[in-house]
Length: 90
Image 1 (spheres, rainbow, N blue to C red):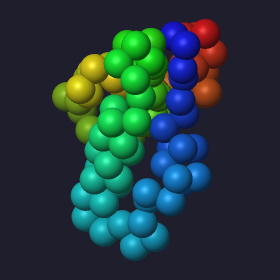
Image 2: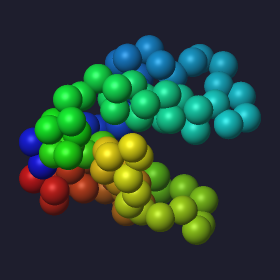
Image 3: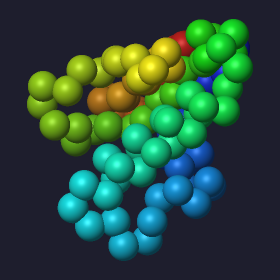
Image 4: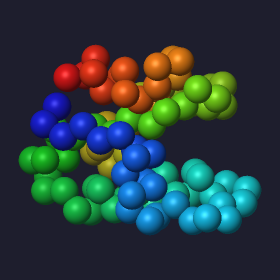
């Protein structure tokens, strides 16, 4: 991977995450961030990029890995979270 992103760190720093999220707000914010990244990265960068979200309480049945419009997305379910998964990917 050439570009590894801690999803929630970037989500908070970007201002995409609204204060009063409400039902489904976090999911909408993640989707907005993923779409922003896909539209901002060059195709060659996109194929070498990945984003990792902490997901200790992610709903059962959701895969721990997926691809969003060419961007690899990981949901770190272990107690160590995204930081540990990013270290493993490096």
